[in-house]
Length: 134
Image (tube, rainbow, N blue to C red; front, side, top):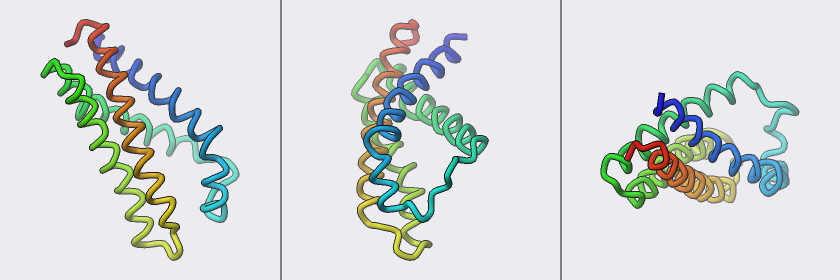
């Protein structure tokens, strides 16, 4: 049950940060650079599936190793690396396959994925300590 709570608390931190980014800060950036590719409304089931799986990855590959080692720095570093790799999977594939996929989107997205996931892993680590898992 504590692991479900850890997942939920980690997700809460992730969504709070990413919501601010997507709805307040980056909305005009993505519209400017990718507007011709964006849907009016997202496909909800795909977004739910992605976020659910992504957060499993954050917990398994970043939060839990940090808790096991008693090292928040480990969670931060592994979270940042996981974010970089995951966001690079999307952005570099798009760059390779889609004509005129903007370089600035690749750079900004990779930076955001790294910062967001490192921060989320930190919050997950702190939640795990609070839950008595570390």
